[in-house]
Amino acid sequence: MKKDVIVTGGAGFIGANIVSALKGKGLNIHIFDNFSTGNKNNLNLNEVNLYKIDLKDDFRKWPKINASTFYHFAANADVRGGLYNHEIDLNENLLVTKNCCDYAINNKIKNFVFASSATVYGEPDIYPTSEECIFNQTSLYGASKISCEAFIQAYSNYGYFKSTIFRFVSWIGKGYSHGVIYDFVEKLLKDQNSLEILGNGKQIKSYLDVRDGVRGVLDISELHNQKSCVFNLGHDETMNVIKLADIVCDEMNLEKVEYKFTGGSRGWIGDSPFVHLDTKRAKEYGWFPKIKIEDGIRETVRYLMFNKSRRFR
Image (tube, rainbow, N blue to C red; front, side):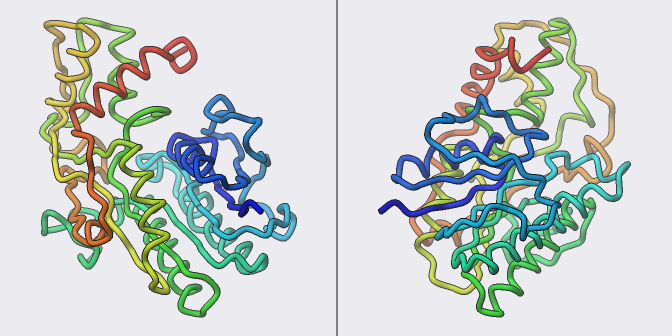
C-alpha cells in the first residue's frame, strides 16, 4: 500500500521538484497550495492530489489525510517585501507554519520537514556559516523563518513529531520562478544593451541546483534520528553578482552589455552581501553538491528562455 505524504507549496519551484522526486519513490502525494506563486503547469495533475487551500485558514477544515510525512515548503517568496509590508512574513510564514504544525499533530503525522532559509543568519561574522552561529536579524523574512524553526522545534520536543529543518541558499534550476537570474533574463529580454544590477555587483552568494537540494532534503530527512535537527544546504562554491551577470549574458549570446549599478554593498535593505553556509553536518549523511554553480546558472537561463512565452509577459 502506498504511503501518503503532504507537500505545502507543491506547485511552486522547489515544491514541484520535491513532488517529482517523491513521485519517483512511489508515494501518494497530496499538495496544499493557494497558487499565489505556484503554477499547475509545474505538475503532472494525473499523478497528484491537488487541493487549493489558503493555509492561513482554520487547519481543522483542511482535508484529513493519514500521511507519514508533512513537507512544509509554502511561504512568502519575497525576501525584500517585509520592508514595506510588516504583516506578510508574520502571516504567510509564521502563522501558516503554526497552522501546519497543529494540522500535523491533529492528524498524527510523525515527520515534519521544513524549508527555512540562510536569511536567518542575517549578516554573520563567520564564513562558512555553521548552524550554531548566533543570529542578528536584518530582515522580517529572516525573523519569521527563525521563529518558524523555534515553533517546530518546540513541538518536536513536546514529542509530537520528528522534525528536519533545512536552511537554504538560493536554489536555481528547472522550474525557477523568481530571483536574480530571473530578474536578469527578464531585463535583458526587454533591453539587450544594458542591465541594471542592484547594489555594486560585488555581493558574494552561494547558489544550489534544485536537483542537489531535493536530494539532500529527501535523503537527510529520512536518515537522521533526532527529535529535531537543523541542516544547512548550500554550495561549497560562491560567486559574485557581476560574474553571474556575465554568465547570463553569455548564455543569452549577448555581447557588450552595459552594467548599470544602483550602488552600495547590498542589493536592498536586509540583503546580505555575503552568503556562504557550512554544510559539514549535511555531509556527515553523505550529501554534497554535485552540480557546479556556473552549470546550474546556464541550465536555469536555458530553462527560462525555453519557457519565456509563459514566464515573461
